[in-house]
Amino acid sequence: MKTIKQPEITQKELNKIIAYHNDVEKYGYKPWNTIRQSHTYGQGQEILNRFNDRTIHLYSRGERQLFVLLEAMPNVIDIKEQFPLPLNETLDLASELNIKHPGAYKERFEHDGIIPAKTMTSDLVVTFRLANNEEKVVVYSFKYQQSLDYLANPRTANRAWDKLKLEREYWQREEIEWVLMTEQCYSPIYIYNLEYLRECFEYPELLDVSEEFYQLFIKTFRQYDDKYAVYTLRNILEKVSDELNMDLFHAQALFQKAAYFKDLKIDLFQEIELFRPLIANPVEVKYAA
Image 1 (cartoon, one colour):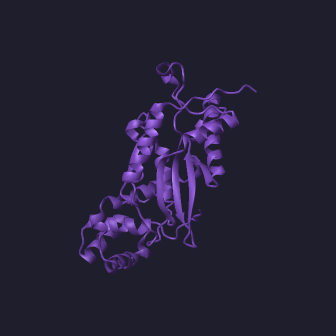
Image 2 (cartoon, rainbow, N blue to C red):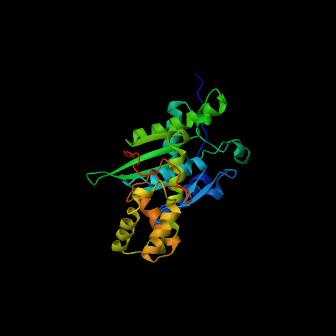
Image 3 (cartoon, rainbow, N blue to C red):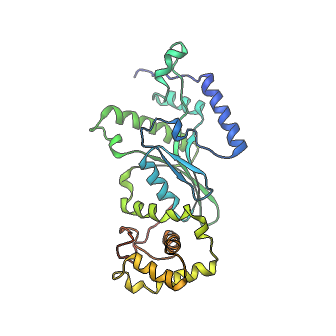
C-alpha cells in the first residue's frame, strides 16, 4: 500500500491554535470556527444555547436538528460545538492509519508546495449528568446519509468515511464515546415540535413567573385534558389565559415551557399547531447517555 504524504503544520495554523486557546482561557468556550468563517453555502445555522445564552454555530440544518434533539434531553447539562482536536495528535493518527489528514490543499502554492494541515473538529461534545451525579461526555458527529453512500458518490463517501475514522479513533483513544448520527436517526416531527416549543426561551421575561403561578398554569391547562381532541391548542390557551387573566402570548410561552420539560404530557410525535387539537398519552422517549 502506498504511504500517503500528509500535510504539514504551518506557523499560521499554530498561531491560530495559540490565539484560540488564549481566548477560551480568557473568555470561556467558543467554537473553533464560526458560521462566518466557514464555507457552508447558506447551510449555516445560529441558535441560542438555553444552558448559558451562548450563540451556537452549526454548519448545517442537520447539525441544528441534532443540537435541538440533544438540548432537550433532561440529563444534558452542556453542549460544545465545532470542538477542535489537537492537530499534532490527529496528524500522527492519520499517518498511522494511512489516511489523508484534512488540509488546505488549495493553499499549497502559498507555502512553497507544502500543504497546510487544518485542525479537525467534532460537531458536538455533550456533557450528561448521570443518575449518580457524575458527568459523562459523549461526542456526536452528524453527516447526511447521502454523503456516506458509496453508491451515490463513491469519492465523496470514501473521503467522508476516512475523516470519520480519524475522528472516531481519536476519541476512542481518549476513552470517550463517539456517536455518528444522520437525519434518519430521529423523527422530523419530533424535531419540528421541539423547535416550536423552545421558542419560549427567546422570551425569558415571559418565563419569569413564580413556581406557584407556573404550577397553577399547568393545573389550569390540565382541566382541559379531556377536551384535547375537541378544542384546538389556541382554544385551550384562550380559556386558560382568560381564567388566569394573562396575555395569550404569555400563556403560549408557558405552555411551550411546560410541554418542552414534559410537565404537560403532550405527544411530541404528532405535529403541534395552534389551530389543531392536541394529542395526549405520548410515546415515552427513552434517554441514554
